[in-house]
Image (tube, rainbow, N blue to C red; front, top):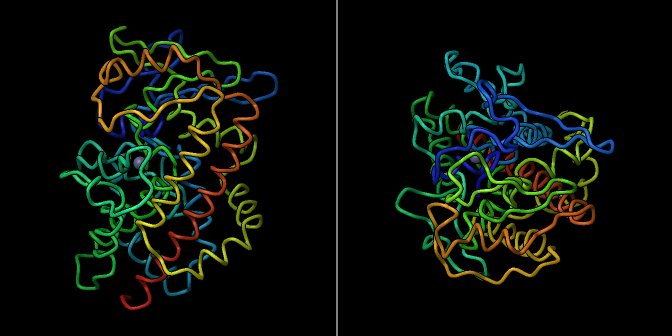
Length: 351
Ligand SMILES: [Zn+2]
């Protein structure tokens, strides 16, 4: 589970500076290259930090959630975030200070990932092939996304907790509920959540990253396209505000059902895990067997998983993109509604 939000997210490897080799150069890390091909805007950028849904995906989740907040939750969130602002010195990967505090909050967890050592909180390695049970056994000593959501929820619900900590809890929740709905953040097939599965995305062949070749690390890869490219292409020329309006409208009926169901973080994670099986791995023309339950440090581990996957010549064509976009849209809409459920619950009893 890493790429734009992935590669560095798990702290499993030093972040490649950039995906497309020819772009390697000074000062490129924070740049996003948009390559227009056949009318498509396709971006390939491996961020220095994990971004999960990419900047715009996380911002979309925050904007959908805002539409579902109760007045009490809106007030609590606004008060905590405005009275305990983000350190103005912090380098913001997604740009500085949106006037919308929840949008601004949505990418903060990635910005403090190194200093807070919160990398493992952004995902959970549920082995491919598992379908039910407690997630605790997959949550390591350093934590995982489902546990982080529960921990931060408890801090937010504690009205006697330090206000700065409660503000951070809001920021973590806005981000992690989004992360948990990126399918490759809740599955692992011995491939670092798809980071070691090179894939031809539309016209783009996977190329080795500018790392020693023995790293067997390529871009695009499955994790990367699900982090960012699938959503970016689905958004086209839209922006998170319009995209959030559109998704909220289109998922209105489902949203009402999600809201009517008691929240259960583990159950949500299992749902997204099943989506990963069907729409990430299952939708590929080349069948990928279930790998042993291992957590490679690099793509040359697990018996050269990077090279083995490269040799399968995986392709994500237009049909794959269309199906992936539907799954991503569902995940973003669910994340928005469920984030609001968590914040509304916290505000109900803990102003
Ligand atoms: Zn993340």
